[in-house]
Image (tube, rainbow over all chains, first blue to last red; front, side):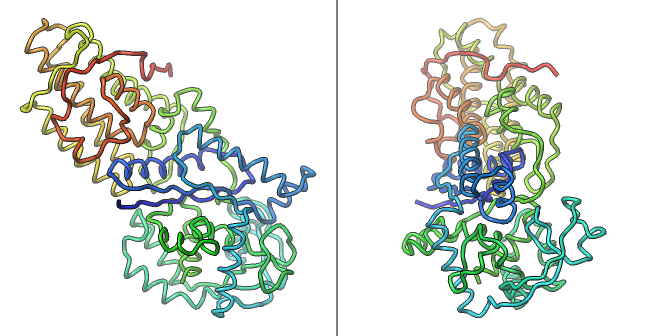
Length: 272
Length: 207
């Protein structure tokens, strides 16, 4: 039987389920149901993204542990999808052991390949986005999305050498012109790559709520690296290689437009 | 995974208003995938009324009412030469193409073209004014067949409602187990099933 496999983003548990989450999830479910109607064997993966500084801060504010905080919010997503009649095949939480094992394997593989190296980061960081910005990307020092001040930080980080992947990514998109839909987003992505890619930090030393780097336990993985890996860890990467070989790659990653860069630049480079 | 600021609309509140499938339909139909969704409460209700209450719901109610009153509640066989057959074939092929292109709103529009055509077909023939007999049976068989095909095509968007309609048409099994292609061909409705009206699928909302 022909297979059809899709993923929704995993949703960050800093907020309860809202329209934006429901939107992508309903579309994913309907497309999967269509493929089932066409006689295909369908798999839909969704889940929750639970690590990072922002979750730590939310938990601190409520006086609970980050795990307790996540345990309270994650079921709200599972309930919402049940209520909306989403036919979920697998729901992954990034605090699960299977995910941790897979993320550590991916980190180690990138480290061994020489794509992750230690460096000192100096720059501005928006906690709400969990992302670094250059001064040009900020508006008077404020994050353009949240309109809050991006803090200046200086810390030792491990970096993923994304800058080495410009040509490889551009070649891949040239060879796979249908990789991103709708079509006009392809130009946005290739345009971004052509401007030159900056290495991105994959670890935090000042944070404990995350997955430890296997070779340096004083650092935890950056949440985006951690979160993106769910797409493979849920399919057995690091825990069940046979299952992984049978079910990866999936057919579609459904995403919202605000996370295109992470999925179309970081993620394929991480997989390369 | 989005770490940007949350949207204020809680989808669960809207479910109480228009039902799970009404909500699913709105999300899928109102925006081309890949473009910005522009949510408005008025837009939601107006689309619910026009596409669901006045079109899909109305078609299902009309067909069942006439079959109940004038065909003894037993669905007549569709005609192979129905004017709706070609429209149905086109609706099916466009719906397939748009779902393959991951364009749910266009796919639903292609499916709804068959609903609109079938409602227009009924308005032209006015079966509610016809005497029971062969002529009426042909009209109602055709309308039932169009509705059966619509029910399969719309099921990914509205699984529960379509399963309800499937049962009201007297069809056995699950609509989700039908196959696009074989089961969406004109003439697969065998006739002779027990057709029931049931509660309105989508009660009209005041705006």
